[in-house]
Length: 328
Length: 227
Image (tube, rainbow over all chains, first blue to last red; front, side):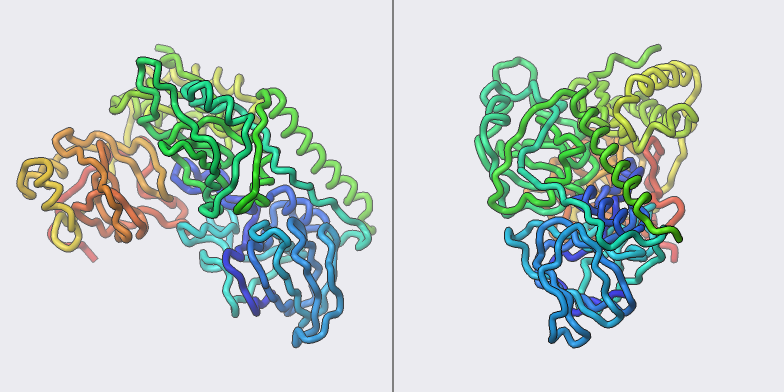
């Protein structure tokens, strides 16, 4: 068990998300940086899809009620390990991508990320063992299910820890957190050609600022106003909703794009100008109020190639860690 | 009959959007939409296509095919064409769901106003609403929220300018050319005309949603809810 002594807004349990239920209106949810979750889990000998904690703000203080091993990923949260009374620090400046062991009773403190709003991840050996709802342990904050009672974690909550699926790995092995550059590669979307020339140009040539009205459902961007073609005879707005996915960039009538994120609804009615390729989606975890992002168009073949490359990297990591694992 | 030339576009490299009607089209032919829902079911259940698919989202006049690997799109679309042709002769057997509704009063606070806007009294309004046969065009907005098509044009209502902050679960409502039921409490911009005691969405149930894409729906006016 992990006891939450001090919580912060949006501290939630997330895994790789709820797949296969969008036809019933159920969003994916899951860790915003799914890649880092899977890396951390592999390092701990967990199933790649095991649930961890997503930390959006700080401070957070957790007490481990059993001997545990943890990995931090994502934004540097200036984590430290403290004794039972969280008075004395045993270890500070914990690095992302390495395994740390805590004795029963010890506490883990997470301080604010340097850039507020950037997410940190905490994975524990055995994973957060909350009930599986619709195939996932992820917290759906909008609908209030999954995770622990369908809510963000609060002080006093106790998170059950499961059994790891593999033997532990060598403690000296680390994984590298992917570094974000806020350059997102996109495919042109279903309504790309309905936008006027200026807008199609501006999407790629201008930078876009993430505003404070952003959350796990979507990131609202600010920049040039993107407008639909008015010259054509046919009405160019979208009157019927379509199925949508995280990564899609929708443009409401005010011309300021919305980038759909993990908790996004399953259907949407705004014109869709482009979509972030799946291998760049993890970067959304580190885009926060004031971040400037840029979009670059790639072809469908490139997007498939990049997705496959990312999968191969994960496979290589899995194989490398398997080789290093001490014989049971 | 082949699939009417869909416009194919991408919602991600693994998400293929097939649009069968022009984007300026407003009302979908119910028979056509039901065939689309049936195609989605066939693709999901078929041993050749099911394993390729992560999900299929039906929306009015379109299907979003979410693939595990977008590179299998061509193969999937070939099968879709075959399944569509094979299904042309078959009658679509739809599941009919009856929804008991208490219209008006505390359960339907917008009924009087809605009837007024449609130029009829509330009795005639509810009678007309309960008379219709509806079908699930798609689910969206929130888990289990079904957009029902087939609403009598006399009952079409522009959404509220200011959404209500709190619409109770089970509320039966009208928004634009659709009617629907709020599965959980939420804010909402539709006009609330009644309430059902049925559970529309339960994530812990084996079948989490009462309504599935393609289902037929009848509303039955009742005066009190069965316990």
